[in-house]
Amino acid sequence: MRHIQPSQFTGNRPWAALDIERFDAATVRLHWTDEAYIWHVNDGPEVFALLTGAVRMHIRDAAGDETHIDMAPGDIIHCTEGDEHRAEPLEPSRILVVERPGSV
Image (cartoon, rainbow, N blue to C red; front, side, top):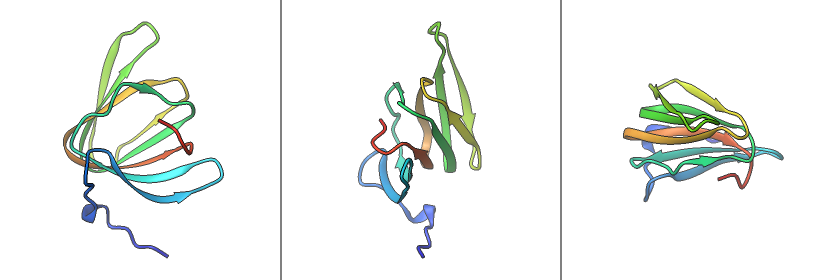
């Protein structure tokens, strides 16, 4: 059994990850970042759970229109396959991400 204290994890680069577990069809990773990620579309579903910090999740719809959701600790966002998005931390943040192994 592992006791993981997210507040004690700091990566050596933005979006550094601590692999927590890998299931047959999913990985569970703790990410630390202080820089925005790129716009991307995953090849499967993705779940973000903000543990510490503040993140603005940018979303682009099929028409190219952009909106965003400001996440606070405890908030969860579920992206389905094909959802274009980009996470922008507003301060150093720790995010638990569950996604398909090898996903972007």
